[in-house]
Length: 50
Image (cartoon, rainbow, N blue to C red):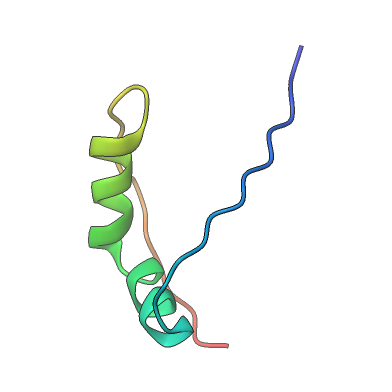
C-alpha cells in the first residue's frame, strides 16, 4: 500500500541559485548519500536546457 506525503520548505535564496544547485550532479550525490534513510547512489545524471 502506498502513502502520499506533501512537504513545504521555504528556501531563502534567489531562484537562480536554487536552480543552479538542483542542476548539479554533486547536489544529488550529496542528497542520496547523506539525506536518504538508506544511502544510495546517482546512476545517471543529465541536464537539459529549457
